[in-house]
Image (tube, rainbow, N blue to C red; front, side, top):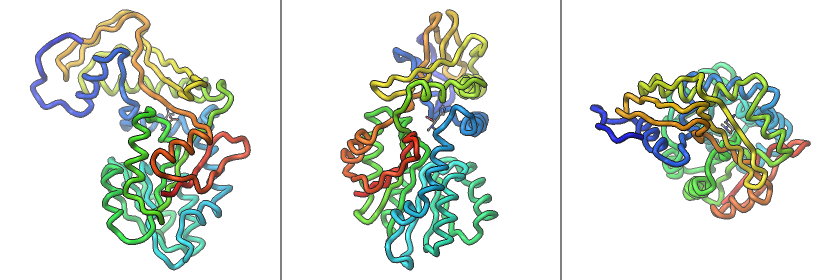
Length: 324
Ligand code: AVI
C-alpha cells in the first residue's frame, strides 16, 4: 500500500480493517464483512445449494433430536422459567424447530435473539410473532459478550445457542478466546448448544465451498463490490477469481480472492492505491471442520464439558450440549 495522506473523515471499522488487512502479507480481509444486504442474500442461496450440506444436515438433526435437545436445555422442573439466548440468530429457521417443541411441551421460557444488526432481528421478531404468537421474545441488539454479561445478572437458567458452525469461522487462537469469553459468565446450571461441522471426505467439504453454480464465488466476490461501493474502491471484478482449498491436516477450508493479473486498485476512502501481483491472493475466509476429540479439547480449554453429542446418520455435523 502506498504511503499517502489520511482521509478527511474518521475511517469506519471497515476502512480501518481494509487498511490493515491489505498491508499484511499475505493480504487478508475478514469474512465478517461478507454480510452486507447483498452478501446476506447470497448466503441464503448458499444454504440451499445441493453441495452445501451443513444447513440442511443441522436442520435434520435438530428435527430428529428435538426432544432430547429440549430436555438437555431446559430445567428439569417444567414450571421453572429460563432464558433461551441465541447468538447470531439469522432467519431463525433451525431455531424455530426447538422453539415450537418447547412451547408444545409447556416450557416457560423467554427467547432472547442477539445480533449487532437491528434490521436482522426485526425480520426475525416479525416472523416469530406470526408463526409462534405465544412465544415471549426479548431481542437484544448488542454484541455477544455484552448480552451474556447482562443476562448473567438475571435469575434463572440460560441456555445459549450458537448454531450453524459459525464457530468454524474463527482462527484457532480467536476461537479459544471466544469460547473462554462465552463460558466465563455461565453458571454450572447454564447450558450451551453449539453447532460444529465435522471432518469428512475432503472432496465433499471442498465442493461445499466451490459449488457448480458459482454462488459461493459470487459471495466471496461481493466483498470487492462492497469495497467499491462503501470505500470508493475501483476493483475490476473481471480480474478476480474465487479459489478455495481444504486442508485435512488442519481441518481448515480457506477461501481466497485471486488477482488474475498485475493491477493497482484505488481505494478512495483510504486515500491509497494498493498494488497486486498477478496471482496474488487476498485470504478472505477460514471455515474449520472438527472431530469429536477436537470439540472436547476446545470445550475443556474454556472450562466446559460435553454433556450430549448429537449427530446425523452420516456424522456430517454435530450439535453439542456443553456445560460449565
Ligand atoms: C457462516 N458460516 C458458518 C459459513 C461457513 O460454512 O463457513 C459461511 C460460508 N462461507 C462460504 N460458504 C458458507
